[in-house]
Length: 89
Image (tube, rainbow, N blue to C red; front, side, top):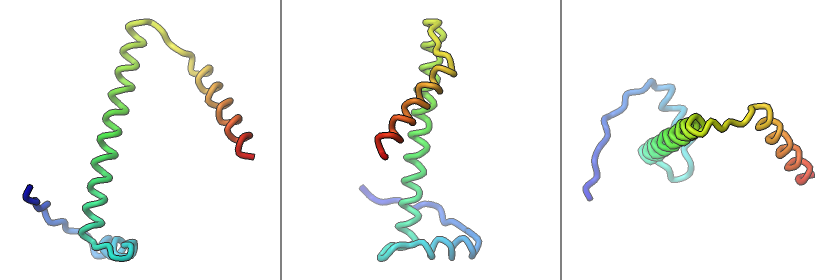
């Protein structure tokens, strides 16, 4: 498959210098930008999936009229966190 170009990107000189400062050995500015774009796309896709699952869960709860009290959920999460911290010590 042929590669395609992205539109050129105009940025302030300070932003370019900041990007160049964080490049790793052998990394080019172009590869850094491509990697950042891929990461941004992945993050947005995951965010959309997360929201879709939340909306589906909401709809299912409405249909079944089955809800869990927020205090119960936060209490269970607090207990889980406490247990995890105790296991680490």
